Length: 113
Length: 112
Image (cartoon, rainbow over all chains, first blue to last red; front, side):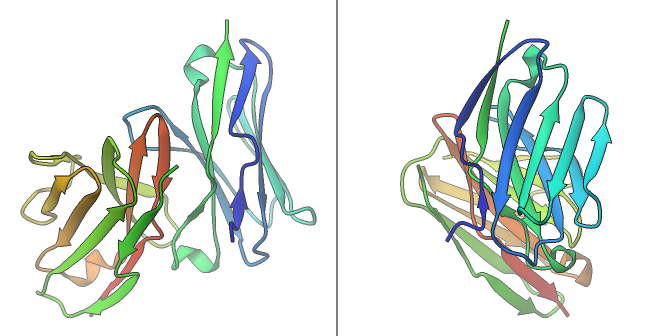
């Protein structure tokens, strides 16, 4: 049973436009959510996170929105740049993370010139 | 796609002892990574496990403390040596192939 779902394996966006990556979860105990970015042959790097007590967190071009009632979060990248082309993973944990992160399967974002 | 089996899922160990964590992938993968995730924190890359050669360690991690083996394209082990309570953490195996990445379920280690 996949508790964190990223239903779009890939997404293509034109440079300069907004990229929206979506993530759904089923475990209502999740209280902290993270987005990671991963280039091929490299480990994932942390991008941005959000606690369940918030509905929005912004850091530069990256904004994460959380809709607890819908168990849905999204990552917005504005404006999209060529260097944003990567795989993006949504991850979640509960109870301070003592039991580790649960990852989605990732969305491959392709930024087109 | 690939499925990663990581063992043990959790363990409680005495300080001064060592624990070896195994990571088995159900298909051949190009790259395997080992991470540490301390409670409430993000992932920290320990090393890249290289098939047939010594692992590539990140700053702050050394082979004597975290020896890694990767005898083939489907299997790797991470040993946490001479453990102290500060090593209590979750250790996560990851694999990558064909530009796709996969994660194990992690090993929750408590050192007492």
